[in-house]
Image (tube, rainbow, N blue to C red):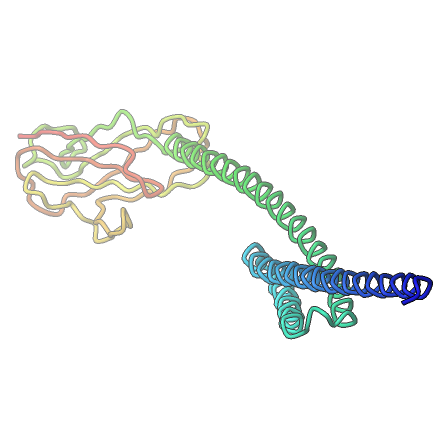
Length: 290
């Protein structure tokens, strides 16, 4: 064969072989690139799924941090929306660029929404903590004020009781004299026709002035009362009295004399004279006669 023909044929063959090798290498590289892109898309899709799942879980967590029913309802709706998008993402192919792009855009929206809820709930919780602290402080102040008021009421009650005690009348210088039929004093009860009781209502600037009804109750040695037939109230019961008299009291020492006419047999022994006014027993004294 002519050398001039063989040399060009070899060159053409080599060129064709080189082209085939280059094409094979290029196709292999393209196939590897497509495989790498597919794996990258799968990884990107998986990352999106994880983020959607994380947001859904965060909504559940946020609902435990708030007591506001309206916000809890909003969180529930956003959680359901996130879970729906997650389900859509799981069902779409990683190669579906349009759907992946749409769901990635939705993911960005979800990210912004949940961030706003986190900030809002954090703000509400801080406000609630401040309100709780303020409420605790106010309750403490109220409790302290209540204690002070109770203390003042107790002091007032004690003072009122002291004033009431101080305002009670006091009978001093109590005496009981037996008199015979001629009006002369006698020590013999069998000669007694009249009993005279004398006493003074002591000076008291805190007592109310005005008319005072004074009751005298004489108890015999046998325990009976020398009664005139009348009664007066004392400590939720009615007691018989021996004598009664209206006295004008001005706050100064006021002498009082009262009489009881003997209508029954008087025995020897100890007699008790008790004096009452304004619902209180203001004096008492025993006397012994033979």
